[in-house]
Structure formats: structure tokens, C-alpha cells
Image (cartoon, rainbow, N blue to C red; front, side):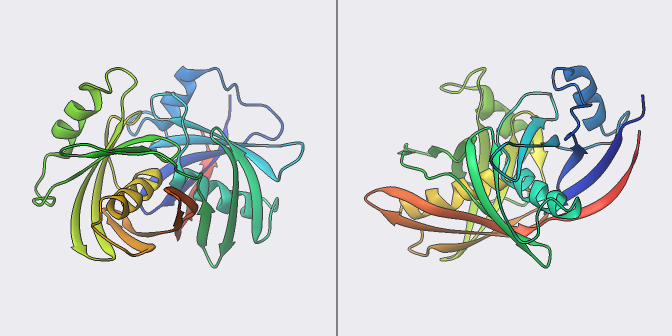
Length: 256
């Protein structure tokens, strides 16, 4: 069976995009999803996104990690917005549905601004911060970030207590200035480091503000795949009006 697809990337976080408005793709076929994401035998990506019709909103985004599990993905959401524009579903502004609820977004000259969900709970621990920005994230400092063994150390934390089988994404952070932080992320579902993680950099920005490492409300996050920005408001302990900002690009399209 032939499958038309598009390949998108947002700061190196890459996705197989499929137009599923006609419901031709079987969402329950995990084996097919993992095959398409496989970098040696399939197309190769960190995840797969189905773009589908929605009765009230512009579209629905259904996201699968490379292992076939489902979650929300910030960079995936930004790429879905760029994909919807390419398909002619939207022009500049949009509202769409994802697994964690409704999202607003805009696209202008290849830069996508995606509104994330509010965050009202941030847990500060002795050596790390934990919060959920659509996906669960563990955030901790690491000064020797350039030479750090992300895969080994990230995997250990991802499966250790208190996360166990449910797991958590793991972000290692180095502060460069009051408004700039360098981030490397081990992503559950990919089970490896990714070049960038949208929910991860969002978690880092909020965590750094929460523990007093910055007073800024517009923060630049440097990832292996490029720079992203996160802006937010804070009132009565609730982070609201949270925006993830960065490029989303079509890499290629084809049939497999």
C-alpha cells in the first residue's frame, strides 16, 4: 500500500506528517507507525502526526512518538500548523485540537507561535524541578552539558523512581545568561536524545523562572537543533499565556 507523507522539522525535531482528513490511515496500527518512524527501514523521525478534520476547530492533530505511544508535542504542534497552512486549511491564525486540549497558534514567514496550556503546578525538589507542559518533564542543571552522556544518564532518570514505567522526559540545563539557557533533552517515546523538544524547553523556561534563576518572561532556549523562545505571564502562581516560538520547515515529501 502506498502512503503519501510529508517530512517536517522544528529546530531538528523531525516528524512524518500525514493528511488523514479522509481517514485512510489506521491509527491503531502501531507496527506501521513505528516502521514509518524507523530511521533505517522507514522514513525516519522522532514522531508521526496525523492531521484530521474537526467539527468546530480548524483541524485536529494526533501525535505518536516513534515507539507508537501518544502524547502532546510542542514542536510537533508547530509543524502541524505549518503543514495545515501548506494544505490550505489555514492562512495565518488557527485553533486546533491536540491530546491535551485546544491550542491557538499563528504562522508568519515560517515562524510559528504556539500557545501552550497553563501550568499551575511546579514541583521543586532538592536537585531537580518537575512539571507538566503537555508532557511530563524533569529539569536539572548540568554544567558540563557539551560532553554529558545524555543517553545513559537520561535513560536512568526516565525509568527511576518516582517515574518508573510511565516515565518522564529529562532536560539537562546550563545557564548562559538571565534570559538564555542551553538545553539538551532525553525524550521518552523516542528513548534517546532529540535535537530539540518543544514541551521540554517550555518546561525549562518555566522551571528557571520558578526557582529564581531568571526574572525574564521572554526566554531563549538554545537546543542542539537551533533556538526557540518561550514567553509567559505569571499571576497567583499560575503560568498562563505561555507561547512556544520558533521555525517549522518542510524538508521533503514523498510516497512510501
